[in-house]
Amino acid sequence: MTEPVVELSGVWKVFGARADEAIAAAKAEALSKSEALDQFGSVIGVRDANFAVSRGEIFCIMGLSGSGKSTLVRHVNRLIEPSAGTIRVLGRDVGAMTPPELREMRARHIGMVFQHMALMPHRSVRDNVAYPLEVRGVPKSRRWAVSDHTLGLVNLEGYEDRLPSELSGGMQQRVGIARALASDPEILLMDEPFSALDPLIRLQLQDQFKALVDQLKKTTLFITHDLDEAIRIGDRIAIMKDGVIVQIGTPEEIVTSPADDYVREFVQGISRLKLVRAHTIMEPLSEAERIALNGAPRADGNTDLDTLIDLSVTGESPVIVTEGGNDVGVISKSTLLRGIQGGSR
Image (cartoon, rainbow, N blue to C red; front, side):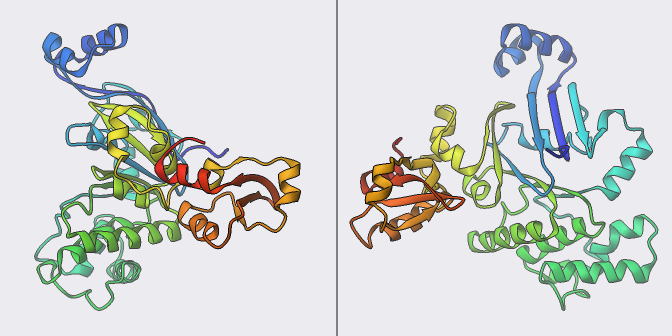
């Protein structure tokens, strides 16, 4: 296994003069967020966060307002100092970095995109995207070439000389993404970048962003309050409540095996058809069944429910599940229905 690109170990963020006392009590007595506030006048923003993000992974952190998701992601580039714990980025301890080292890491290795782009209104689109390179002293011809290339990646060719005010909200958001990509960072931090957009534009940008990140192999921490968005673009999802990471898993794991009632409420309205895979709902296949069902339709273990339904309606036979060319399981119509409804096999 390769070394994680981003790794958080035992990270706490507690706001207040008695933060150390609040952390000690929270660890010893399992103090809740409200109890820490009552007893110590301290607010627990992040509570004992632990996770690692692999290279090229889109790791979504989601939760309602006040859950701690934005506070958590700002620890990665040390915009917020942790009260306790360790953050490692590209193998280095962020907390041990000197101010020049921290500035270097932010400038070269981490790009950040916020909900509000804060584009400079007096500068052209090209100059907005090139600004991080200008700060680093890159020659104008080089930074303009990089800017034009990056704008091409987000489908904004022909808009290089426009002002931000001449662009739609979705286009401005793409300028912000291009600006984050201009310095070719290994890591992207995205804090609800699409939440203010109209639903259709939002869906389009989600698809474009995921395709772009997959193409460029960027490791991404993506903050959202929308589970549909997290499921649509995330490789894994962390769900937060009151500063606590309640569950981490793939979209399929989150939907099929919610950790508690809080997560269960989130996922109850999510369609399972494109998420749940054959290997999750299949039943064991005996040798006798394998021989008897030799002519039955077959599907790979990663086939989703939607495709399994299409296979199932073509005949009366169950669907045989294969992995690596071997028959490993069987899905009957009743098993398929339970999978659609959310029942266990």
